[in-house]
Length: 536
Image 1 (cartoon, helix red, strand yellow):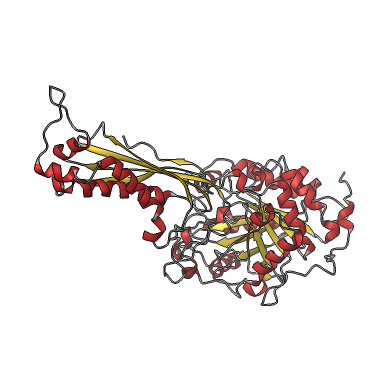
Image 2 (cartoon, helix red, strand yellow):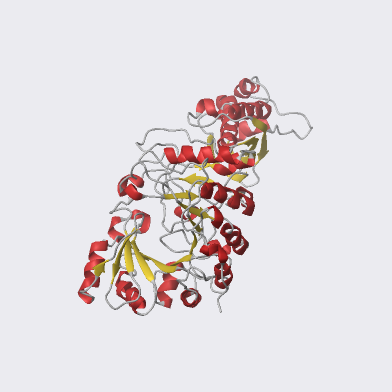
């Protein structure tokens, strides 16, 4: 027996207060749909979405907490958002997912109409009844194959049976009554890749024969590779050859899918072709990333941090103004496929959409011209980096740095060239000062580096225990800032080693060589701590 949910009987029209301005951009598009990414983590490794070893994730403290999620959602609902969808990563990984849905459901009197979630279903079936009872109304289940072996090949994980169990549970919870708790709609998100699973489209449609289910087919290729795309027109031809009576269904204004029905089937199916068939003119979507940045377009790298302003003490009105500013920057349409590939954008797993992002140069703009990275929305944190390098010397030069003693305890006499080198001063002390100075001048030498107020620099030398007549340099740079100090550590090592070369060139200028300069450790920032494995 299903329990009544009084909040679902409230009017579906958004109740916007007179002071709350709807989120309308410069092209008269009203934005009433918000997607909130709750986590960057995922328990699958789909080959078209992320590398098998995973990706660099934000530190947990950089992610929005429960109260921050609800506060931002409340502001958006107050300004006309009717639909919220929770995404990831995989949202069910978040331990507080049940409570978040329950608290979002309390926004219905303000005009919130539906609460949706996109999930891979791996850990869903036990949580789903509780989620629905707390207010979840729409579910999109990501499933690219009906074959267990192929599922493991695509996702690099086992779990096909668990996903199918989640699907069965979801369909059992479907209810169209506005006075009952239940899911209003269940959809499947099917990413089709040529030569991988495009032969299963008809099998997915067969599921809709006796189930209230809507598979949405999305054509995608690795890194947007055109050779892996399957045009929706080709898929539709295949479907119509099996089901000649396929008819176009009526699309709602802001639908991203073109929907179709098969006579005699309970469900429907659709195609999402955001690249070949733009739906930009009716786009009503906004996104909040797991680390609290608003994205007004999935295919635009521009982001504005709401989290930083929120944590700095901004009022709701100030945050709403920032949201309005971001919406005002939304372009009329996104770029074409080939042009998007050149734009700087975070990997889609960090936004909440299943699509791979190839490596991008961060210091060039969309036209390929040099551009300094904008760090204004990054949090100020303690950061450090350590770099190392070495310089090979001749025995005579090495003995100037570490003078040998005669059998009587006196110093060995110096040659003319050695006297000339020593006359410049103590080699290592001078080189240490040179390294510190070089680190402080990094932004003056490397044009796109940010000027950083360093809090500490250390430069030290040791003689190598592995390489004969070799000096090893190690430098660490530290700061409290918005960007890392790897370049400063590298500049310190290079500056110190070059100073050694200059001071000893009269003795062994032709034989010396500097090599293996590299960063070996960093801490702080979005990507967290990192230590390079030993090469030895």
